[in-house]
Structure formats: structure tokens, C-alpha cells
Length: 319
Length: 166
Image 1 (cartoon, each protein chain N blue to C red):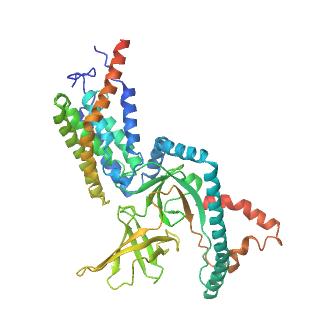
Image 2 (image 1 turned 90 degrees about the horizontal axis):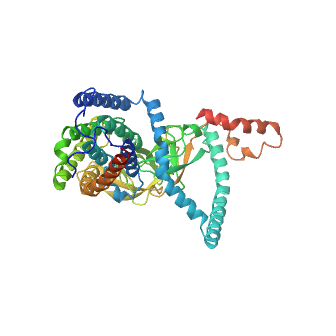
Image 3 (image 1 turned 90 degrees about the vertical axis):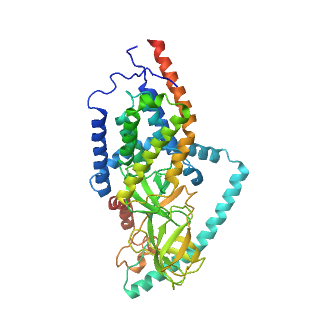
């Protein structure tokens, strides 16, 4: 143990004494906390400060990206061929389902037109990658490699191939912070597919568990029920799978059932996510759903050209 | 001997390293046992190079932690400033402690740090988390001795390098 170091004790504190300095900085910290908690004044400053630290997060992420890159490049021929065959099968399977989907969507739109209600159009998506860094270890937050510059916005829903992942909570320009559905601070409005029962799924802080705290004791819910986003609240587009009910427990004396569900998305393994923008255009004519892309193209040749060229910037500004 | 050879480069590089290790992606099981590296590094440097590493350094590192963690801005800045102040206040006494006593002191300081963060979360009405916050402090206590050995090594190297040129 060194008794004295070269950085020795005399002239230790110049300027304001340590007590005063502490007082000033503590006051500053408290003011920052209050402003940040109100969430109005600091948003810009905070996002630009966080953007400064993004290189550090990228540096931490670099080995993971490099390992993935190496894995992709060093994969053997057979592995690639096998993978390719798998993908081809998957595409065929999904394309087959999509064919029916187009017909169903058109039918749905016609029905909705008959009922004179809003047609649900497909959602706009933006692909983002989760940067491999841990934020607060007690919370479930992630950093995305897309931000406001690429069209992400606060409140935007995140999904992966299996289901809802979370939502964007902070935009940092080139990157964004997102909250996972399992964060204890997060809740998703959901609907039980089998019964149409609506409730709220709250995060537990455990990556493979959501809790449904507001289920009445006589609610019709069973293990294995699929929960999809209900679209209430306007943040999450309706109809994406959120979780499957894994346990229903009704302890006598409790006012509500204790229901837990397992998230559909692979929250601990997901790397690529889709940022979804709901496109709920009110009173859309029913044809506008699926066949619209191909059908009117031949008669009005210049017309589709112009909207196509206008469309990307238009969506960009809208977001 | 009036030249002080504490090297700002060593200090900031080690703090940056601590930040990066803090945000390293890890499996969820390890998360609750991941020591508060930045706090540990700050306690060490405030104790050893009190003129170079002070309350302001701690404040800046705290802000960086808040931004990286997506926490309330100022939360760690507050707790780390207080920890740095306490360390500076007692640095002459702590320095000559035997290792076990020093570990206990560092553990207490880390607990104080965790407590202020926890408190700020509570006041702001944010989820205060489970036991993970406190098991991290215990992990910090366990990791203190090896970490200090590593930082001692870094410090010796930079101090000796300094003397070669004077």
C-alpha cells in the first residue's frame, strides 16, 4: 500500500473547497433530474449528449458484429446450402400463406366498407438492428442503430419475426433507445384471440414473463391462449402477437387472477427488429389494399411514377 | 518532486474502460452480479490521485453512466459526486488501511452510491428494481481486490514512466 503518491496532498483543493464544489454539483444534478423527469426541456440536449456516447456503444458492439461477420464469411458451403434450402422452403410456405392473405385482406376491406368503417392498410416498416450493449442492468432497454435520421420516432412499435418487442422511447438522431415489453415500466394493451377479451400486459423485469394483472376472477382465459396487441392506446398496431398465456392461478381471496404469459418475440436473442408505423388511413376505398399496386398501373402510366418518386420523402417527413 | 506525475491519460483511459465494461452485453444471470466498475475505478483514483480525479470527474462519469443506461439524467452524477467527496475527504486515512478494511470501505462507498441511485428512482416514481441492485454491490466488494491490483499496476506504470523523463 503506497503511503503517499506523487500526486501529493498539499495544494489539494484550489478554488472552491470540496464541500462547496459538492454542493454545487449536487444542486446541478438535482436540477437535471427534475428537468429530465418533467421530460420537456432536456430532450434535445439529452439526445445530443447521448449521441456523443454512441461511438462508445458501437465500440462495445464491434466484437459482436465482427464475430457475426466472421461467422457469415467462414461458414462452410454445406451450411450455406442447407441454410439456403431452409430459407427457400420458408419463403415458399410464407408466399403460399400470403396469397390467401391478399384475398382475405381484400375481403376484409370490402366488409369494412360495407360497415362504413376505417380500412386497415398494411403497416410501413423500417429494419433496425439492436446494438449489442446493455443499458441499465435492472431495466430492459436496448439501443437501436436507427434513429430519427432514418425515420424512427418516439412511440414507434418494435416487432420481430415472432411478435411485439417493444417501443422507441428516445430518439438520438443516428440511434434510438427502446423499451422492451418486459421492462417493469412497460405495458401493452392486448386482446385474447380466442375470446376477444381485452386487457393489459405489464412487464415483470423478467425476460420471459409478462403479467396480466387486471383479469377478473371469472375471466375466460386459459393456458396457451394467444394474446395479440389490441391497438388500443394507439401505440402498437393491432393484431401482432404479444405473448401466450403460460399460467393462470386463482388464489382464493384475491380480487384478480394471477395470469402470466410468455412473450412471443425472442427477446433475449433478437438482433434485427422491424420498426412499424401504422397506416390507418381513414375511409380508404376498399380497392386500396392489396391489388392497388398492380391493377391501376397500366391505364395511368405516368401517375404511379410520380407518387412512387414522391412517396419516400413524404413518408420521411410524416415520420 | 514538485511535478506531479499523475497521468490524466491513464485516468481517463481506465475510466473509459470501466464504462465500456459496464455496458458489455451479458447473459441475464450475470447481470445481477456485474460489479459497478465505474464506481470502483472512481473510488480508487480519488484515493490515489486526489488532485487529478475529483468530484467533477465523478460528476462527468455519472452523466455518462446516466446517458448510457437511459436513466434519469443526473442520477449517477449525484451519487458518484457524493462518493467522490467522501473518498476525497478520507483519502489519507483510507490509503493506509489494510486490504480487508479497504475492501469494507469500498463496499460501503459502493452501497452509498447504489442507495442514492435507488433513492432517486424511488422519488421519481420509477421502478426501483429487485435485489439485483444490491447483489451488484456485493459483487463489487468481491471484485474490489483484483480490480485494485489491476489499477495499482496501471498507476505504478504511469508513475514510473513519468519519473523516467524528469
